Length: 464
Image 1 (cartoon, rainbow, N blue to C red):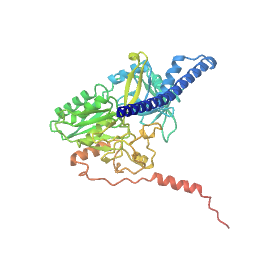
Image 2: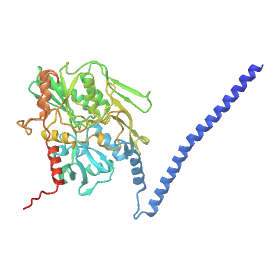
Image 3: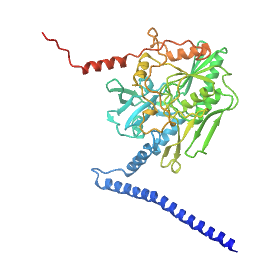
Image 4: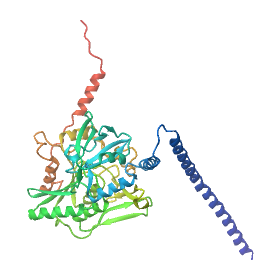
């Protein structure tokens, strides 16, 4: 009998301890909740003050939408709020047709920055480059505007002209006049270059996998003895994840293409290839550069890890995160674009901030090689202050002299040096077997350094 009483007493003590623990947990969870309610009350107070005391009447809807967008963009550069109009525009863009200029942009410290112009669009033809800043549209400043609001100013009726004010490194601000078009970018195109095919993918929309497969089939029809393919992903800003998986699957017989992992370690989703290689096993070289981002990096990383292709060019952008578009009330109130996961290549590496390193580093021009050596060529995910962290201990490669750049006698105006070297790799069978060119010599940083030292010295004087 005594034994049962002890057990009962023990059970009571454990029960009392559990109740105390639950009570502590409830208090702990109530504290941050109370703080959240207090901050929401603060938001209401601020909104009320602005409504009553701002110098002119305000639009409550616009204020609240801007507050939501500010909350999301504070998380990372790729999260944000899409109002109903912007949500419709985004759906048009992923479908592969919309009205505008053809520029993929982001926001950096309140400034609109070009990720990449899209192939064969007004922006591309006007010479707008990745890394350019757009400071004004039609003479009106867009500094401090959200990307959503800035894009609204750039889009409009086809046939209308738009003047963008561009700030570019090492040059004075200048205006570029463009005419809006109905943007129907063909995401995949192809051309024959002797015994090799060059397949260019400019973005990843709903049509990309089908267009890429068709482009490859056309090449093989035109030249049944095709010896290899250069897959050009340079300045490709990314797009739809399923299309990146689909394009990778065209070249792989089986195995993992990419995985994505959310906040919960158990929340892992894997994407695998199905049997069938549309090229029939032809050798592939993938071209990348600092404008190769997101979905384009998934393709490059998958083909590199699976030893299906070798990579030529310069280190990619380094966007290793996945955004989920979450409609609000079925899209009536717009949508959230929220970063919900990181993606990982088949070998398990995250390229967030660090990018994909090419097997053969080749600068497109001598000027680009010099810029990389001087670390003035820094446009990448790592340049965003609030970007998600890279894997622990990993850092993007800093200033260095690229392995290769066009020699002095190479005509950069007539030939694409990176494509030339990619085709060399196809010809010799691998990067390892390809004869290497002399490493370029970076001089500008040394000259600038000497000039600064000279300026710091007092002028020499002579006594007579």
